[in-house]
Structures are given as C-alpha cells and as structure tokens.
Figure (cartoon, helix red, strand yellow):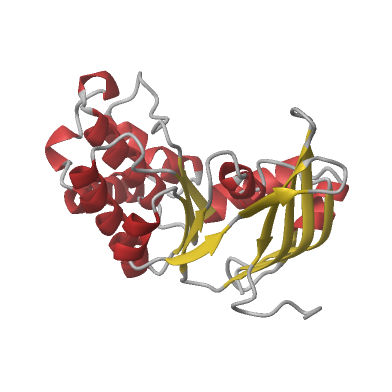
Amino acid sequence: MIFSLENVVKNRAQGTGYRLAIGCLRIARGERVALTGLSGSGKSTALDILGMALQPDEAQTFLLTPDEETFDVAGLWRKKSLDAMAGIRLRHIGYVLQSGGLLPYLTVAENMALTARMQDKGETFATKRAAEAAEALGIAHLLSSYPSTLSVGERQRAAIGRALAPRPDIVLADEPTAALDPIHAQGVMRLFADMAEEMGATLIMVSHDQTLVREAGLRTVEISVTAAEDGAVLAVIDDRTTPCAAS
C-alpha cells in the first residue's frame, strides 16, 4: 500500500464545528482514486492531509510508502519534522491545484520544468520531461508563452503537465477540471488519468462529479456527512475495499 491511514482526525472551528474522521483508508500503488462528496464535506481537507500539507489533530496510523521506504507521517508530525516532509513531497508528490497555480513570471516550459529543477535532476532532464508532458497534453506550441496569455483550459493543462513532468510516484489533484466546460473537462480528465496510469503513478483526485470520474475509470471513495453528538458536522471516510489492520 502506498497510503495506509487509520483513525486520522482533523477538527476545524467553523459554525458549531467540523470534524473529518478517516476511519480506514488504504490506497494501493498505481491506483487511480477519486475522493467525492457534497460541497464542504472535506474533500480538499482530506487531500491536504494526504499531501502532508495539513496536520491532523489525531493519527493512530499514517504510513506513506512511495517506493521501497516507508515513512511514518504521524510520527513526523509529532516530531514537527517539517523539512523532512517537505523533502518527501518534493521527491515523490506532484500537486495540481484547482486554480492551476502557475507562476505568472515563468513561461509554460519553465513552470513545467520547475519541480524537476528543484529536485536537482539537471537542466536537460527537466527540459526533456517538460517537453514530453506538453506534447502529450497538446500544448507543445505554448511552451514559450506566459500563463496570462493562455485560456483557462490551457493553463490547467500546463498545471497538470507541471505535476506530471518529473514523473512523481503520487499525483494529488484538487478539482483539476472544475474551471472547464463539460466537454473540455471530460477530455482533460481522461487524458490526465491515462497519463498517470502510463507513468505508473498513484493518482488521487478530488471531484464533485461522480459521472466524470467514473467515465475516467477512477475508483470512488465517498465522504459521508452526518451530525456528531456534540452538534459538529462529521465527515467520515471509511473505505473498506482493502481492510485496515483493525478490521
């Protein structure tokens, strides 16, 4: 398993309170998974926890095994090992933001090669990977352009290319097609999922559109929302497709 989480909890103070409770979540290497649920159910919160960008308040088990090494993420949070987690993210995780998140002062090519450069893989490697991803995504003719000159769809393709170019073990995507019209969204979703599969990357995506993720062949993990005894909104992930140790 690339992700193994049990009894991971995140509380937020909003209204009467909000609690995301991950009872059991295990994701196999190479899987393509979509986190779905109602608006405000905690999909992006769950993705940020998986990406080690948001500290859980409780974590019985949180293991990440991107390659032959297993990282105890719960332990790293307890020790406040922020630099170690930043290094893990840089080496193993690509992230696609809902807004794209391209740096406006860099060209498309420079944006897409940025992560590989930060990994010290060399200029030739970074440029080659960026060009390959741009070709696959149909934006090779835009490599010298700046984000401000691109359409919304082109910017999102460039953001996807930036995440995929260094060939990460894990790709996390927060509503990567939310800003696109349905026709373009379907095409980009399918292309994104197919590229991740071809690379052997584990893809975990947040989406509100179950039809779209189903057509792209992703396994769905739905976040259910109920009321807790203390009146807080309780969002629960309890995916028993692959049982947790306590099951």
